Length: 151
Image 1 (cartoon, rainbow, N blue to C red):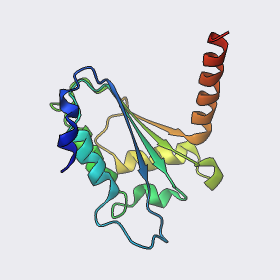
Image 2: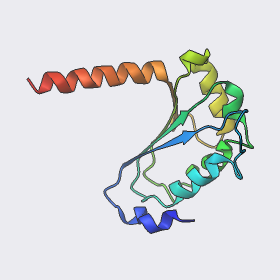
Image 3: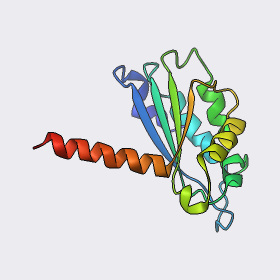
Image 4: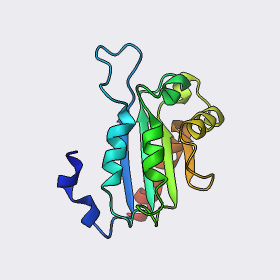
């Protein structure tokens, strides 16, 4: 793949990494040639072994069926890449954020169950699931702290 050219494996101070996946919809004019998470897994495999936290944001999720779709999203590939303890000895947390979940009527408990089914190799302590309502609240609090610190 093309990710090796970035040289992320040599970034030994890299402890956190975030990636955004724009989930294909059922009405996509051109279906993906490979599951989206396959490319993400290839990128993740090039990360430094010092990575402790990985955040994966899922954009354009309109239904839980999209999260479980092995053809379009294929989170199993990412699950396999992250389950390699030799490649990621420092990994302690994988956060999957489902954006716009509340607007689509997706609840965090449902999203959590669907993601754990799609990524079964990640143990209970590693995988955290967040939905946008929690993320927006955290961003609001964080922005408030930053604005108050500047005074």
